Amino acid sequence: MARTTTPLTNTEIKAAKAKDKEHTLQDGGGLYLLIKPSGVKIWRFNYYRPDTKTRALISFGAYPSISLADARQLRENAKSLLAKNFDPQNHQRELTEAETTMNSHTFAKVAEAWMQIKKSEISAYYAKDVWRSIEKDFLPTLGNLPVSLIKAKTVISALEPVSGRGALETVRRLSQRVNEIMIYAVNSGLIDANPASGIGRAFKKPAKEHMPTIQPEELPAFMKAVSLASIDLTTRLVIKWQLLTLVRPAEAAETAWEDIDIENKQWRIPAHKMKGNQKRKASGYIHVIPLSEPALDILQTLSPLSQHREHVFHSIKKPKAPMNSQTANAAIKRMGYQDMLVISIILE
Image (cartoon, rainbow, N blue to C red; front, side, top):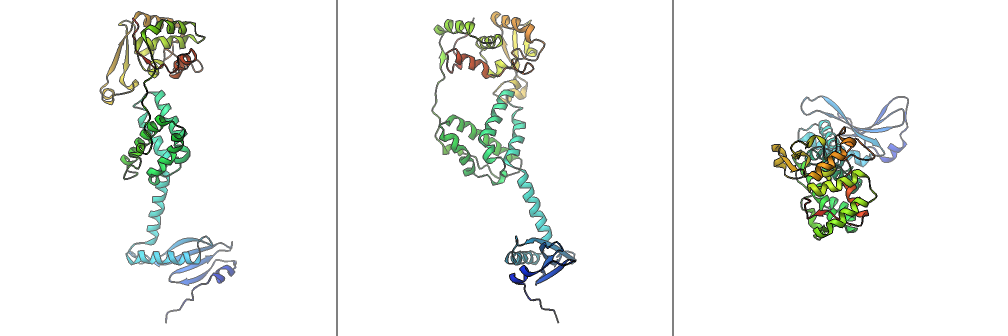
């Protein structure tokens, strides 16, 4: 005749004392409480594997974190799996592995992986700017979240403080960047769909503003201001270089000596150093800028100062690095030309 096990009670469990050796309190149906000499009480479930019919044990956790009612529910869940020929131990291991995998793919780690690819497509300065914005506006709130748990509302909540301070253009850029990160997560098989798709529509669109432009008649006064300004020689010359070549601030600041062809009076910029068309970058396109005599004079002036280095316009604080692309703009602003970012004339 089978032995009948009397189910445990909460009072009995609480009163159970540790002994010199491990001992158990049976609840029936394969569930029992293991009491260690240290006093730790652990729920275990004893069963036969559905494939090999060998005995196996699975732990449900320690009491009182796992209550008697919790342990009984876990026992019923395990029995349900066994009825379907699933091994509860294997099932628990798969869940643990899935949770570990999910937790390892946080937004911060996925963003870092995306950035490794992104920075090969853009200039070094722009890459720093992109990552700085992600660190500032996303990582504090989204960084530790598994990417699989991020929803549209999660991202919108992270952007609301930025929108609240009226930085709508920043919201637009951040929406694009988080969208790219989540697309990367989809393409990497980490999530099934991009939750950030269309989140930009949750915010007002930034008003389009035309940047202030120096008109031809204003040029003499501007050039005089540049000549008289209390700024470093390299900064003065990078402003003139940008006027003469009509390139973006970052491209001017990062001008490399290896791209200068003095003999043919050309500045040959490889596509990978420029912002823009990806097809051109893939094809090995080179952007050729003819150099005027004033531009060549700038190179001649800087040759003894920087030709032994990589960049024509090197950083004052870090000579081995290029000048910060915002150094020229900051100097221009101090001269009284606020936000002068668009040049409408070509020096001859």
